[in-house]
Length: 216
Picture (cartoon, helix red, strand yellow):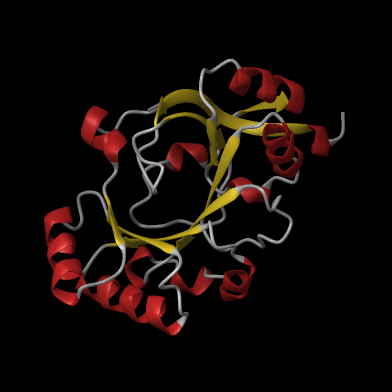
């Protein structure tokens, strides 16, 4: 079997979408194994190496059994595996809404344009700011969303500057998310209100509901 015909899968599960403007909706999640980044706040380090090989057909069958139109492909970094692209297209052909959670360091040009990218720009305190692939920004579509995970006031000021310098607003959904256990979300909310930023405050709804459990 060729590598393009299978995927290294960490987990597939059904839950409530906890992030982005799609938060609160039932969603099927596909978490792919492997990541090229090591963010200091990473909450899915188990996806760096754990996983099992599955055929594309087996992955599709597992996802399609869940009663939801919304599917998120995440990681790790899902765009590292070449076979993710036929998976995305097959899900879209099945009339699913497909979200791709990507860390912003991998070329997004091969992604099926019908999918929605949740594009994570790494702030300084993530430890991965040098990995941002800035040329990707010109490839984003209007419906794609940009996310900044904020660890500190330094991160907040940096993200605000980037947002304006890259002319992300108005017209694009920009998500500011407080890093879990590092920045109180109420503090981030206060900064956003004080500066009248045209962003969406994001809280990790799944962690509020179930804590730091896997498969949710």
